[in-house]
Every structure is written in structure tokens, then in C-alpha cells.
Length: 245
Image (cartoon, helix red, strand yellow):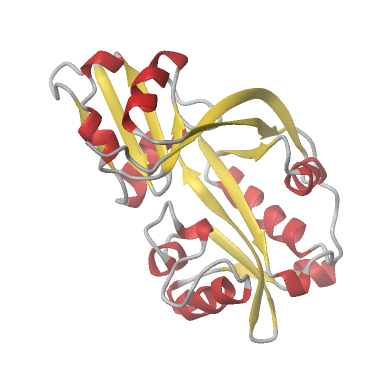
């Protein structure tokens, strides 16, 4: 495995930390092809000719971080393959301040917040009852996310209004993902949550990072307000479903 850099290579250490996801190698003793997966994320390295297509197909839809030499294999394995350009950011500057009043609404999530995450997912309108919010995908669900120690929320009364969490937590980096209840946007709540997440990351000796599609202006604007600056651009590939055999 290559050294951990900001972005997808954090996935390998995150699988070990979270206990969610897994690895596949052509030879455990001397791997020449490697697949690491967690939630919707898939990382490919090595020789594509040594990778079993069934190992890819069995994962279903997902986002692949892979060198171009894997594209013929992905094209044969899945019915659709869509490139997606995104920017990778590292926190380099001090974030824009938020008011002490707003910051006071933010606290770490704990095991007792699973139900609040359930309601947060439903209020966001993106999932049906019993499904997890996308921000919990790399932890295996709301219970694991709430207990992870890497999630911070802004609470207004009984409502979890905004959430920042370690989407991928590696040995050296913590990649942050953010979501806000549509009813509570434009209140600086997301920025306040990011403040808490980056402060905690630095206390753990982790460098805060961020990834955003170039088309997602809201995410890029929030990242820049939080002191993140783009260090590179990369292409990832949404793939799926698996082609029938």
C-alpha cells in the first residue's frame, strides 16, 4: 500500500479503525493486486490482471479510486462507469470565526444519539425509515457513527441540525464530511461543527482533510471558510450495477 495521503488512501487505515469494510488481495503473502472497500468507497491498487472481477462485482454500486489502468476491468465488470472530478483539500489556514452562541450548540455525539441520527436522516429527505444517512456509510450505520468518537453535531432543542464527522479516519488524516438539516441552513451551524471536528482531529495528531466535487459550490465554499485549501484534483469513478454474466 502506498503511503497515506490526503484523500482515498486514508481508507485502508479507516477499515482497521472502524471494523467496517474489508480487504481483498490476490496473494496475502505477496499481494500484486489490492482492493480495499468501506461503505460506498473502493480503493484499487496494483496489477488489474491479478484482480478477480467477481470481487468487484459483488460489492455492487460504489465509488472507485483507481489508476487509469483499471478502467478496462471496471468497464467489463459494471454496466455504467461515470467519471467525477473532485478537489482534495487540506486545512492550511485559520477558519472563519463563528459566534460563541452558535458554537455553544455543538457537542460530540455519543451512543445515546443514535435515534437523533435516525431522525436527522429522515428529515433530510434522502432516506426511507430504517436506512442510514450517507454520512454513516463508512461506519456501518448510525449506531457505530454515534459511538465512533469522531462525530460532532449542532443541536437546536431536540433536533440534530447539522453534523460534521470523520468520514475516513486514518493514521495521519481525518477526512471530514458535513450535512445540515435543510430547515437549519445558512445559520453557520455546519461551520461551527467543522470547527469542532478539526480541533479534535488536531488534538489526535490528525491532519483535517476534505473532498468535494468541482460542481458542488456549497461544499467548496464551506471548505474554504473553514480554512481548507485545495492541494490537488483527481478523477474518481462511480460504477454499477454489475453487468450480468
